Length: 91
Image 1 (cartoon, rainbow, N blue to C red):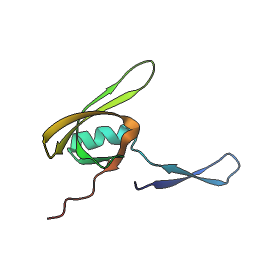
Image 2 (spheres, rainbow, N blue to C red):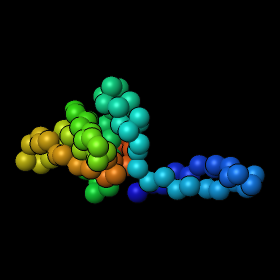
Image 3 (spheres, rainbow, N blue to C red):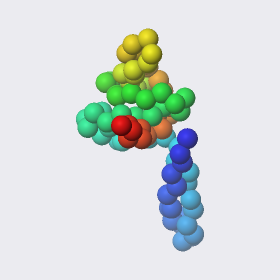
Image 4 (spheres, rainbow, N blue to C red):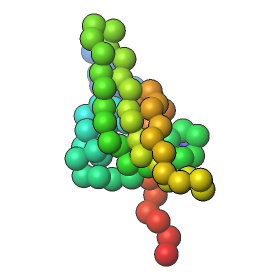
């Protein structure tokens, strides 16, 4: 799992680094619109077909179309399990 870090400045002017290991909701919608393949934390790869957010709890379920050996399936996973865009397919 690849981790991304970003620097944020605190009230005291010190830079603090935050480790981000998942995509946020804004990125998820962008990946879905662009029909990009995404990587899950368990190594599966697929395309996002639906995003469901429940209110007031704020939980988000992401439906992903995956291609497995036995055929394509739809996996419903929590937002935190989506790592980000999948690496490009090798020819």
